[in-house]
Length: 115
Length: 112
Image (cartoon, rainbow over all chains, first blue to last red):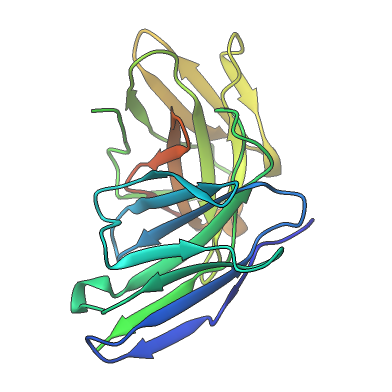
């Protein structure tokens, strides 16, 4: 089965530094998402992206966050100035279409640790 | 606000016994419900989804889920648990637009 791939698997950074998390969605998918999971807590929606635009974002996704599809295959999440509370597992996901019964395909995640 | 709730942090079951992982929902309009499973160091994997009109939904790896509108529940079930079913299970709902919300997750532990 096709997979969503994420790099790196682990990222350690100092507070205040910028990080870019990278994802390669499934090739024929058009809708892309970022979720995060703080250790021991629920999976939280961050943002959805379609046609080079943000479709929806959560209150977590403030001005420190941005997303980009720099080319035909990659989808990135940038955190401009990391905070301790940004430490979490970040999951990229993609789907073929926008239907509400569409399943999501998730990558294995990037564990971000902010020191 | 729309939400899904998983009342149990952990479910323990012996191998070969039936298992149930509970989920209740509070949504506006029709529910678009899913179950996902997360194995260690892996992303979430789709198990099954609710299809309107089918109160019993069958999914991957022998799992099924029972939709109950009057109880606003969508419990995940399996007739005979395997040790390999031990994982973290998430109930989810697509709220419309481009957003899926997840429950807090239930850790299933199947003992040999």
